[in-house]
Image (cartoon, rainbow, N blue to C red; front, side):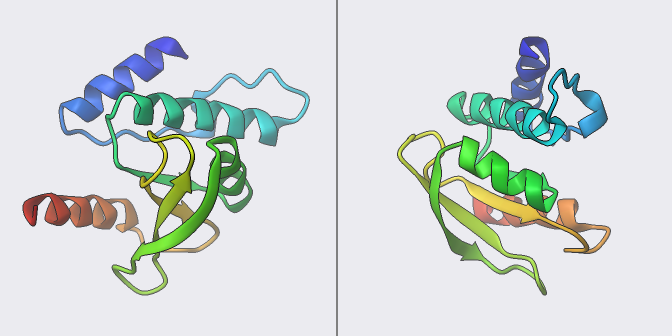
Length: 130
């Protein structure tokens, strides 16, 4: 996991996007949902601690709610509503690395086939407006 996190931080630092799938992870737990959420939260926390990302998409309703809890998110507020039923949320947490991060918690049939690209372009337009 450490090597994957290091590669992720390097890729993000180079301006590339990174995606993890559940079959990328080794889950040695009797509760696979908890193990998946724990692994996801560990990766996201390391990336945020390194300052390598300000936006994160988590797919899966149950998974995303568990990951936000494991990250210590106390509450969420709407940061943007870029298209249709897509809402980008701002995390509020005691951990400064997590506080203020923008999250898209994707469950079910939310978003079209270009959702990830749309969110990336939204971030590019935010960076250009600073």
